[in-house]
Image 1: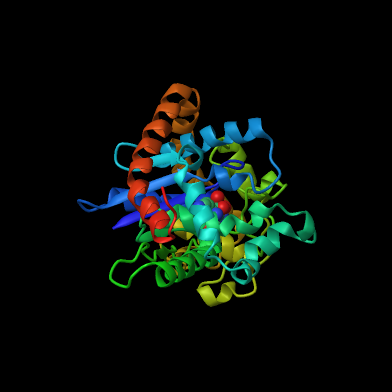
Image 2: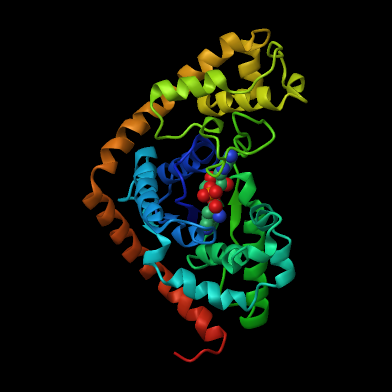
Length: 337
Ligand code: TYM
């Protein structure tokens, strides 16, 4: 079993990333059997597919590394690194560009969303982004990839690329790549914006009030929950009662996920109560869960040397693991080296 996943170092880590992905990474790391391995990386190469400021990217990469360690990723047990220190990611992407089809990439909803109306002006990297993501996981023979719902389509593409590459260039008994399985947490798959229950909580939302950042202090977290969009009705006593109430559903989902309870259990306790009661309880839970992480995060941010050392060591380990698969990919394509 090998678990691989990544996160873009753009903006700060928010509650959606944490509940949708990172908390799962930590749980998988903590329950690893002998011989299994976790690799987690900062997708800094992905981050240049959108307009960016170099100094900001440098700062955000270190900040995201600190956030992951603060959340519980342990660099002694997991391999933690940034893509840019492992050239095999870019190399394999180019090799896989020969296998990925234009039609497959054109169907990616993230490309359509992020390029918007200005498709002609979007970077070529934004279009080939999912091929780099496929390289990220295929390079390490990942068996499982823990992600939020929004990354499912990219993972399906990685599986298609692996299958076509194996069909076209490898013998049946010696495939070059494994087809990885996505692992998507059932109830936190999509944490929504605090300002709009139909839009996902995102680093790129211009309103900071739309998300809880792990770098927010307790007062800010409380204020954001208090101001979160809700409705005038009391909470229902069962989950069907949340139909057509996206903001109420989102707040209940956040509560349930943080407390590791089902939404039905949360509603059994709070059904009939208004948001005047529910929001303070949610705010308390958010602060209680996130404040130890925030404290550790702030300490780590001041230790640049330690962060550099963690990423350098992780990258050296990643380069070593990637070596044989990259060599097999070159070889099977007929490239002399
Ligand atoms: P990114 O950086 O947007 O998000 C990192 C992880 O957080 C999850 N996530 C969410 N989950 C639930 N609710 C939300 N509102 C929410 N927002 C984000 C994402 O699903 C993701 O798991 N392309 C990827 C990074 C990447 C990657 C990879 C992931 C690059 N290579 C290889 C897995 C394997 C991305 O931009 O995620």
